[in-house]
Image 1 (cartoon, each protein chain N blue to C red):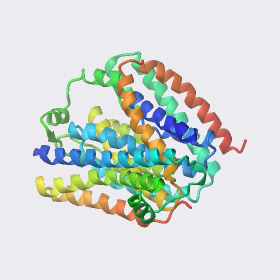
Image 2 (cartoon, rainbow over the protein chains, first blue to last red; image 1 turned 30 degrees about the horizontal axis):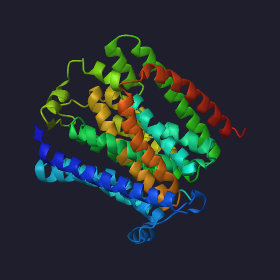
Image 3 (cartoon, rainbow over the protein chains, first blue to last red; image 1 turned 60 degrees about the vertical axis):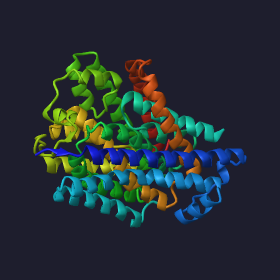
Image 4 (spheres, rainbow over the protein chains, first blue to last red; image 1 turned 90 degrees about the horizontal axis):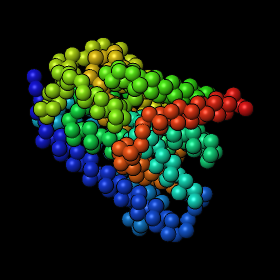
Length: 117
Length: 294
């Protein structure tokens, strides 16, 4: 049983590259503005997603860095989503599509797990 | 100045990963705790961001070359992601001293693995790749060329033709339940200590599950980012990852990966391994002393 998935694979890689570039771009721009503003990390506190998103729209340096970092954190999930779609629609391999979905659900669950304070 | 030093930390970790074939967690955490005096749980969260940066770059290359066995990767990810969540949650309840001691053990094991692969590298070539796999290291540039001298296994041939091998069918994957259990342990290590877990996953796939080395390496690379993500979300959402610290490190890792790729053709990885063995011994002693409250 062979599975030729070159097309899907190329799409996943292309998406990964685009997302990585966006992430690096946001982090780089944020860091550049941060340094240009003469800020130091001493006074910088943790920033949540909503605050980062709204701040990034106004080009706030820490918000841009946080958004870039969040996108970086999400990037591996894109690989899992790519594999899920590939198994489901290209290869019609339902068991592995379900396994991929399971991994995706575990990743989603990590968003709701209370942890290190 | 602090930002520059954080960037250099990432650069060192990224270069180290590209040159010697391991994640940068073993570099980032000691520097952040020993020189920047950060709490170890904060350093672990930042290290996970660096691990994801390393994995993202590597995954683009490996997945695009269709070397990773994504089926096997997905099966094992069920264990590693759950393990990473457990590890990240456990980190909140384990004392910093215990984490330092655990970390010292991991770094010591890392040094021992490098020593073994160095020994093997001076011996026969096929043994070198076997040993580096047994020690959990990704083959570095020179090892990969050595590995390419081996007769390709069945899955390598299917990979070369642009097709994904099937876990447990064409590749003849063995011991899936044991592999899954041990991979969960790699996940716990990732969530608890901020390392990629390749030290466990590659030997498990190669030695226990019968996966060809190159496929095991590529599959591990695919996996470490996904595993790290599970833990990193927990650290981030609990306010443990400050972007102003993590971003210079992550950008440094990306730059280091590029630098390491370039330097790989100019620097002897054997010499680097020797240097890092001593560095890791020093780090293990320092972390151990911190764990003992000295």
